[in-house]
Length: 323
Image 1: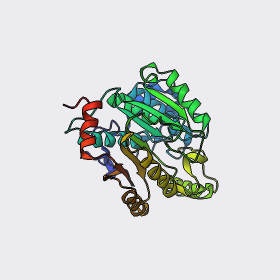
Image 2: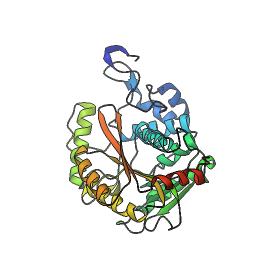
Image 3: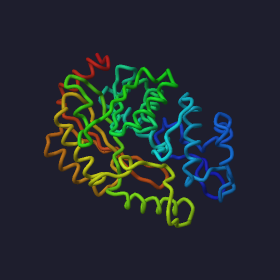
Image 4: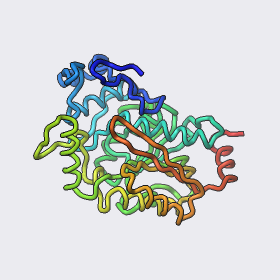
């Protein structure tokens, strides 16, 4: 592993091997495509050029540059205050999902527009569909309960024809529903992905922001600005991550034949036992837990399917061209 001076890692070895963001950011190149980023580039405590990751504006311009350089997306933008997700982590989820499908397809990653993923909570940034289509050619259904997020994601797609025809954005009118109102009863998707709201309240989200800024800067702000932004439905909901995932799990049973693999990120390890118990109760045929890590943050993907072995074979033949 390459190591830069003063012990900082040059390579983010915890990221998936196909993740484009394993190396340190080439800020000179990124500044060329996004001149606004240049004013935020300054030496960090190790003497290397970096940005202040506690500054939401700096993070936004970094994302804009990363999406243009690595995914050919131009004019990317989001409304003020909306979630500006870390691109490396989002890319990792997509690559791990590709491995999940690969394992179900005799070691071959299903690619192309006939492979359909559903992004539960696509957000204003539309990042998962952008990365998933660029890397594997997949089509996406992106749902969200926030109309402004849908409008923002659509504006990004409208300015990027290479991806726009492969993403269908759908507004979820009922906040209590996940798949109802989005998927038609006879509609098939190969995988669903979701990054659930983490916190149970605005106050908990604020406390989390204090911890995050303190970790990044060493200072404890009284009124922190979330470096990745985020509205209420993006960062917190009644019952937090645990209740949101419980809703996904129970609704997934009603769409058992519509989806090969249901997946969700699980940030809190303490929620895993409850999730496993629920999946056992509703008759999931197989459950997988995929570890993920970025820097000091450890997370995981939980995936489950209701399909019998025979149905899985038939699915591969019909949708992925498996012989």
